[in-house]
Amino acid sequence: MNVFTLKDFSVDEINQILDEAEEFKAGKKVDFKGQKVVANLFFEPSTRTHYSFDKAAFNLGCRTQNFEAANSSVQKGESLYDTVKFFESIGCDAVVIRHPKENYYNDLVGRISIPVVSGGDGTGNHPSQSLLDLMTIREEFGHFEGLKIVIVGDIVHSRVAHSNYEIMKRLGMEVYTSGPKQFEEPGYNYVDFDKILPEVDIVMLLRVQHERHHELMRLTTEQYHDMFGLNQKRVDKMKKGAIIMHPAPFNRNVEIADDIVECSKSRIFKQMTNGVYVRMALLNRVLSND
Ligand code: CP
Image 1 (cartoon, rainbow, N blue to C red):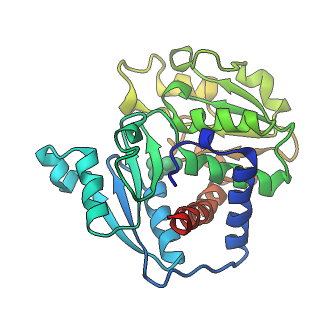
Image 2 (image 1 turned 45 degrees about the vertical axis):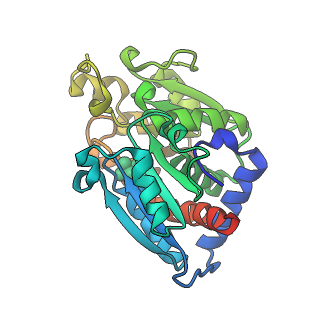
């Protein structure tokens, strides 16, 4: 089985993955005793996704191979398919792939016999990030139905926003978006950030993804922070019990003020912790099904 997008998973399956992630967090052990090898193929920079998949594989008793495109035969023109076929040929049992091309996995479907788990495809989807976000939300509130979230920032370039918007609506959450006009995703549920802020249970901030822009951001970073940045003044308007999330990496003092990153409402580092457990659940699922 493959993990490309959460659209391929039913709500029941999503909850099963989250259940197992919680079990891993509570101490459940699975040990492949070094008999399974997971190759982490990152064609784009990553800290959290790459190294938490690596830690997840380690926790499951798997060995890993960590490939970085910049020091590989990709530089000689080797294709994604030929690269993945190599890791399959040398006996890897699963590959985790992050790639800048949206839907990169269409080049692999039906041609690779080992499981492929996406670590993010361009501006498309980021399934393991959504799962760790969902785990963090479920731990906090115990349910999804009826929760209100506002996702703020560079939505159109964000695979995190695209994944979360779809699955959170399917789970019965009220999903709102806000951010600069330049980065609006057509058809999404746009609202005034300051108006919705006191009503939401979750404020999810996104990084401005300069590396994906075809034109410069029209706002200065100061203007951005003033209009959409989460600072103490805005935190004071959040309702009691509401939380702050961010997939990270974050730009301090742009989308989030420096002193808010680790404030009592922030769950940003808990999200990172949970990332290991949801990735353990995903790897266990694909390695047990092959
Ligand atoms: N959140 C996330 O995907 O972070 P990385 O780019 O560091 O993997």
